[in-house]
Image (tube, rainbow, N blue to C red; front, side):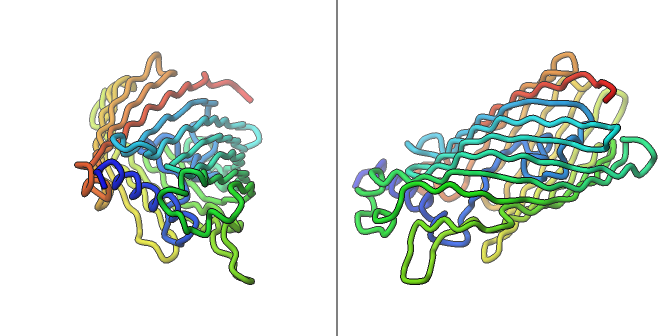
Length: 306
């Protein structure tokens, strides 16, 4: 068997593990989570205090055919007179023979801690719909006897999320839980037992804006992910922002990768960011650690009175 076949079979096994095992990663990942906290925490919807829209395009394991590809469209806004934030996310996440397409709507409510919107304690709820699909034709050659081949190739489900978020000009910290309902996927059924469902994912995220001088801000940040019966996933880094125009950051993903990020912000409203991930595992054992590439576009609307 040549190396390309070995790599593809590895990818197939990783992809279908989402339907067989509890330790599979079911929620898509983005490296630029710092500025898009509401994607994984509904309480952070409207945290910026202005309306924003944007898009993320991400590819992983770039040297492997069928490697993970994620596309996200997002937007949020804040109504200060109501103390309410709204956010919406549409996404497509594909790995080998599996794909997940869905949408989320998030709403947050803020408690002003200093009588203004500068310091807020935010609570949020979110609702989600998604479609899980399996390309059974792609599985047939790699896993000819797999029970998935006898099941439906598509499931449409709904689920929910909740979170809490503290927002200030310096410290920002939040905790959230996704897939609270744990909707069953029912791809495989054996008697009365059902295998495969959406498992609860827990997130913790924090950052601190340290103004070094009039022009430069350094922001150390970190994110922790937890799922029952799976290893804790942790990453951390630091971002340097110069005059709210240029940014450069580095980060480390525990036991997996390092990340380098660069960005530019035009007229304080339109930002373009790029992140490169260098993977150490598991694909490095087969393909010298293929990298990941992520591009993010975001537009910040001028503040208006609501």
